[in-house]
Length: 127
Image (cartoon, rainbow, N blue to C red; front, side, top):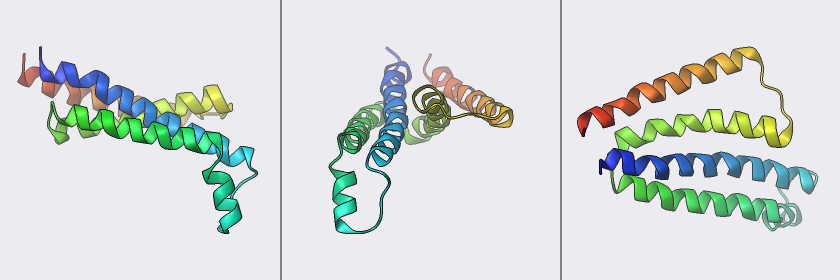
């Protein structure tokens, strides 16, 4: 099987985990009432279940990313990280109720088009 096709699920899962980690961090900060730079506040945030979920998502995304880079070049995989902007916007809207203005939707559409174009370079290289 084409290594680029094999790497795609790893890349996309890593991007989604990374985007969800942002949501988990925001939920953790909101749950504890924010953060200041004193030790009790940092411990309260750092030990909150949402923050630990965030860190777990980051850790798993790194493992998936390593698996993807084992299969493809960095310059092919890295642009997919831009899909995190779209994943994050959709998750923020769905899980946090945040609004997304029309111009941001247009920008996200351009990002998706760019990533799609670069994705075809890997598929064309290894038919």
